[in-house]
Length: 89
Image 1 (cartoon, rainbow, N blue to C red):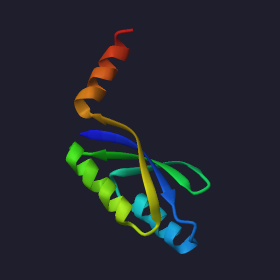
Image 2 (image 1 turned 90 degrees about the vertical axis):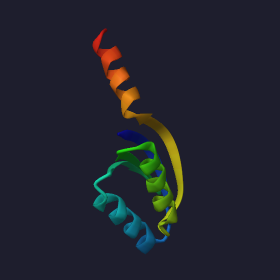
Image 3 (image 1 turned 180 degrees about the vertical axis):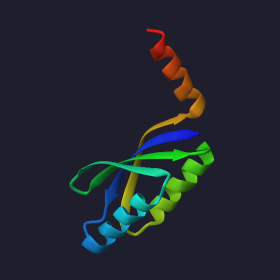
Image 4 (image 1 turned 135 degrees about the horizontal axis):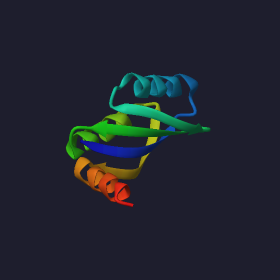
């Protein structure tokens, strides 16, 4: 499993923006985070890094999403190591 933190830049066009928001909300791999104006934080969870890449490509193809920034990506193995390290403190 891979987890990624994404920042989506949404279209200023209301209909396109609402369509993009609906797309994010309806995809079980995506969890909507805080919004600031036309930027939306999203957490993406996929089975593999490749699926995460494909998901990003699909989001970028949506007409209501003008840009996508990847803030963070961690494969499951790295996440498990972080949890174990934090638990040792």
